[in-house]
Length: 190
Image 1: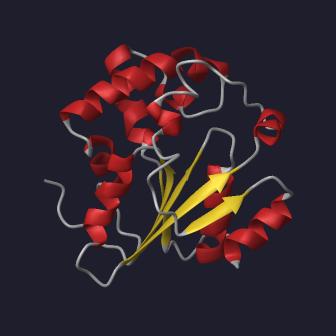
Image 2: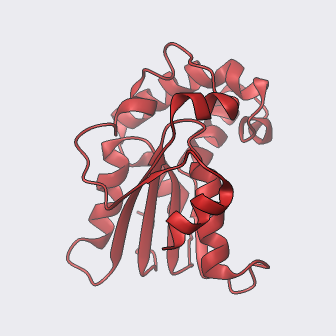
């Protein structure tokens, strides 16, 4: 439906809210593209972006505000999760397909894999090929996540969107992100 995308490597990042997934993705992007990003070899692909865009359109909401870490997004998070699950039940790859549409960069960093179907979608793209897939789990202790602004929310933090990848996945790399940004950078780039 979307054509065969071009890439040579996919790095999948997964982790709980406020574990440091986006920050880790930014570190990796700079490592591949340089500080100025002038080489453009690397794409940060957010599965949640097309989900939020479609949810905003369907519910007449501010898409740009849903992309932020704002109270506005938190007001809609639970309903957005339920709506997203409903959409995935119809087509498990719907948001992954939308997220990679028209990508031309050879390196993809998936910043927010949350379900086994997300990982399976990208595994199918490298199956029987010379392309690489690296699965990275970013972890942080709850007290560290709280320092970053996380607060347990029933129906969110105990839902599949946060817990579906806690078990049953063989991670290629597991990074404990409880320290400084320098320590995180070293762990990611070693």
